[in-house]
Image (cartoon, rainbow, N blue to C red; front, side, top):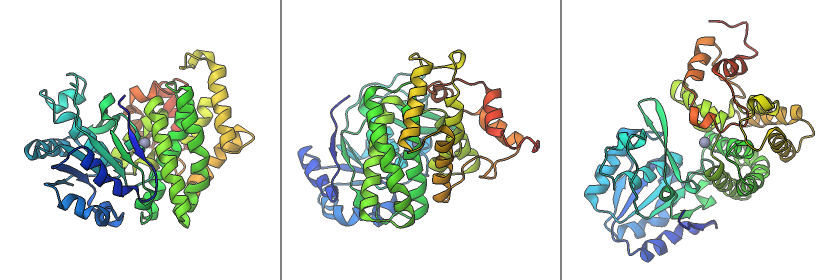
Length: 384
Ligand SMILES: [Zn+2]
């Protein structure tokens, strides 16, 4: 991985000028979320920086990165002959910027590269990632989510990790309650999943262990009665959770969530949180026969104990209940059933679409049948 320059202080949005100057940038390409750009205060802070350069603007994309939107961005980027990409917005804007950086320097078709049929060749366009939400951690990862039709892919390359990252919590101060909750829940799930992930390392465990208590402390305040301190805490925590999953990757709740989002329209973080407490209990009952982590059952159980501990709980049951009441306090559903996804065919369709690669990173393996039982559990009376 290339070294990343990270700016975490309030007001660090103004370092964009310094970074562009250091890169001798005359032609920045700005990938931005229109609403967030204005409401975050980024526009006011960056007006002269961009006005003094031949800036190209790209905001023609839907929520959750989709290939046709990315391809449009790639075309505009190539035409503009820009020298730096600046991403300002939530996870979608940052992922789209990453994909434009990666795919604009390829000769093979984007779809073939994303599907893994053709390799992603090296590329080197400086990217400045500026999150206006506190949650996805996209600014800290070397992969980008993209949907082709309804199928979810993740494009990975060391250079997809943004070279410059500005985590300025002041940009999140005007975030609406629902977005604060949804994005914050993404960070919450990432921290917990990272702790039990097969791909975890001492380093990722350290990042996630720092992130989780920060989220527990600050997210309800940031959602219900936001203060500068809670916003700062969440920005820092979301960035740490991003650094954790950059190493460990995500697991079952994420693997299951993509179908919940694409089929039922729930925001990403809300969808991930729906299966979190159930997966905690499921993973806690890991046995030698279904343990996917080569470090063994006792290692996974120690990680589960660590999660219980970080949730300030004495028992697994208490931790699981805390997760559910935490999610409920933010006004979000704690299960598929609570979200109104309660017929067997609906849940079957979600299980069929589970992302296999993310699922293999879950510490306890599962078949479609066990997963269906787990997710449909408690609604056995509902059969159609
Ligand atoms: Zn996520």
